[in-house]
Amino acid sequence: MRRRDFLRNSLASLPAFWLLPSLLGSSCSSDLRDRAAEKSVLVIGAGISGLAAARELRDIGFNVKVLEGRDRVGGRLRANRELGVAFDEGASWIHGVRRNPITELAAQAGMNSFYTNDESIASYDLGGVKRSTADYLQAEEAFYEVFESLHEQGSPDKSFAQLFAERYPQYANNRLWKFFLSTYIAFDTGDLDLLSSKLYYEGEEFGGDEEIATNGYDTIAKHLAEGLDVLLEQRVTKIDYSQIPVVVTHNGVESPSDFVVLTVPLGVLKSGDISFEPALPDWKRTAIEKIGMNCVNKFLLVWDEAFWDDVQYISYTPEEPDQYNYFVNVKKFHPTVNALMTFAYAERARETENQTDAQVLADIMAHLRDMFGPTTPEPSRMLRTRWLSDPFSYGGYSFTAVGSSMSQFDDLARSLDDRLFFAGEHTHREYFSTAHGAYLSGAREAEKIIQQIE
Image (cartoon, helix red, strand yellow):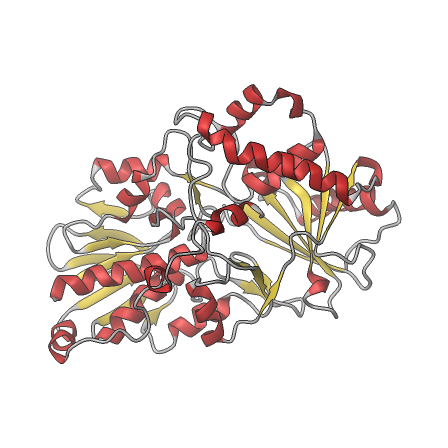
């Protein structure tokens, strides 16, 4: 969302070397390679963070294996191509292409992308009433003024929803403002009644345009996985780091390793599906508990013919927020495909997981028919996600919840006894909740392990 425009400005003057890891082609001495060859590393999780760590460590000379619970690599980089177009069920956008490591990776992997213009938007109110562009932009600018300043009045123990209601009660029933709160904040962060009023503005983004992947974000994962020893369908249930080697139990098998890099999502850490010996220290468990985990589900609908506006985005402002109020016009970057992509966020996203396809479709079509008329046809196909129910994810991405602190992202990243390391978007203080944050965290942990043998 346009929130990123504000954050990009603070990064515009930073030199590229400050932002980019030494991933893919680290140079090192033959002595270092010899020492690396004597050490083993188990990477748990073949998402972008795990693959980033494994790739760099392999290139240095470590004996690296990757354990992945799913039957494919990529983690939350997952594209469904059943309908003739790559439907990215997880990460879709490169959030700021300038100096973003994902931009270079995309070029190397052959991932194509398309500039999505945030200002190419049509906005509809109840009854199919179309707003003027001037009215929409005026309200949007007023919203951003509030957004930028409200955190100065926040506190760690108060939610964003509470603070907003106290300071701006005049907007409580304004449908357009509820849309902004939903799509510009809850989508990027998490439930507004759980989101910290002090920390909601934290996090940084790269500069440049926003670009959406057009042939699948998972092309990056497949590229990173080339040449790696990846074992699929390996469910890790225990990590014993009480001594060297660390012993990882997966599918009932015990695998020893000098170092372990754990890259499972925060939702998996919260679930307790993996046990630790000894138990994780209190500060680590507190961070796991306090940092929030958002849920976003996506829905792709395909028709024989397009009936909607020739714009990039279509917004709709129903009374209830967080569900099917924002549509991406897929036809703008796939001209032969008549498709819209829409979303559910936070608690609404969780609720959709218990709904049938027919129930979900009925709710989406109720919004579309209110905008475009009662004769709006049913789609020929629909694809959907259920990230909360995914046992290898249990949600979408992390956010700054009430009662959390930024230092807890650092705690999530802290290694244990110089042999158990942690990566993933939830471990990156500056770039949490992003694919590039996950990637950079994997490179960071690889460098920590390299330092152990230097």
